[in-house]
Image 1 (cartoon, rainbow, N blue to C red):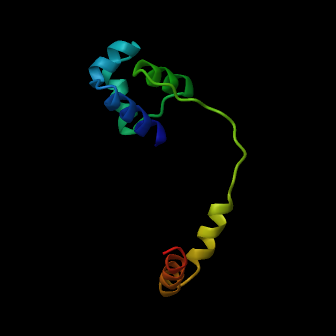
Image 2: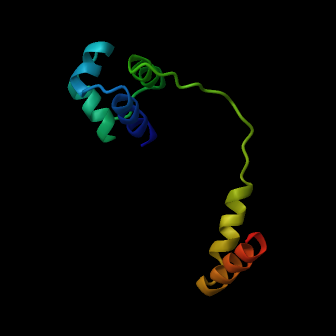
Length: 96
């Protein structure tokens, strides 16, 4: 879960314990722990509140979706491992 990773990262970067974050955010330490473990996902509003309590902002914005990398990955996945290695070596030879 992305929220678990974000909460833990923000807390650690802020140098806070779970108990300290709980005190700052007005939430129970056990709730913070469950969110960090990914056992429960916070609402978007709660996630933003927790990130802010750590002293950070998590800017959200809409962006056009770009799936072009996914199509390249699907094509490469269909290649044999030997062919993938050959393509990698060819690409490195061009840039090296």
